[in-house]
Length: 206
Length: 196
Image (cartoon, rainbow over the protein chains, first blue to last red):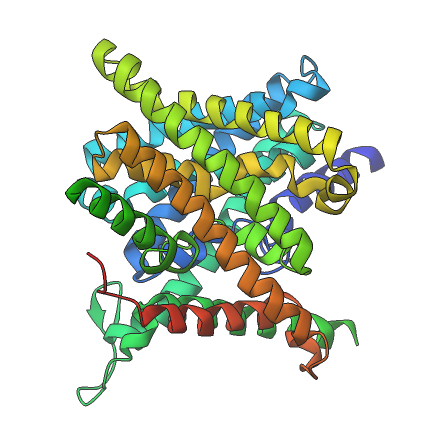
């Protein structure tokens, strides 16, 4: 009985680790391109996050299934190939069913292939653990990433155009901060958020 | 003469005006990870330039002469990633043999060039821009890699001085680097609109 419950906790841990303790963007500082590039508005950011969750879960599943066959020196290329396959599926799906989003995200959807988060999770988790654990880990990390994207996008969209996911939220006299829509807004927002995250962590530790 | 002009303008455009790091946010991971020291950053920039030039040309050739005629565009991403991984493998062997010191300071970031977004991004953008001439592709690829090298060297020079600055405890490391990068992009925004 004790063994069973400890296994359960373990699985729950895999699901929640990505949310804060191992949040890819705020804590591990990997996969920094999408949080900067696609966060001018909330909707594309959410689409991007969901795509990453899909690819992450599928590639974790595939890599976990073939983990006993992997040769060390061919590992990375196998990861890349399986990820590229799922990204192609995702890209074609978006093009067919969400053409507007596909247009906005452009080259950033195929760029999920080289997103460090997915390769990192494949290397650190899926190539060592069983299928269910890897799937839960994928969902957890992907959700953590999506939340980070949405926070960034929310801040930038509200300040840059006074709307949240297309709905006006700021009072009428609000002057939009054009800088938030530009690259400088992305870098500075992410920098401040990372500073805030490490401040919170330091407070918690004390 | 006109073609030379276009080529030079294209090169300057991807190095300065449309620098991949500053306007498209590609390659941010090594940009933050390897920019601690100037010599390492320079080596990294050169390695990336070589890989971008190689893989830009190779993927364009594969795309133009194999994938499009055979109607195999669906396998495009998979082909691209294989080409890039091969080019990185080449660089890795070369650096290991001739620059063992540099190899040590790169550490994990050298094999990770294959997951550098600049390279795959360039291959995809060449596709999106619809470039249909090998010379242009070669110039744009080299220029993109060179732009990355310029960006990472500027950053490394700033960070070497940043060590001596009194930064708030929680902003040390990545946060202050990101904010610096933000200010740098603002400087580079001054070039916007100079060339197409």
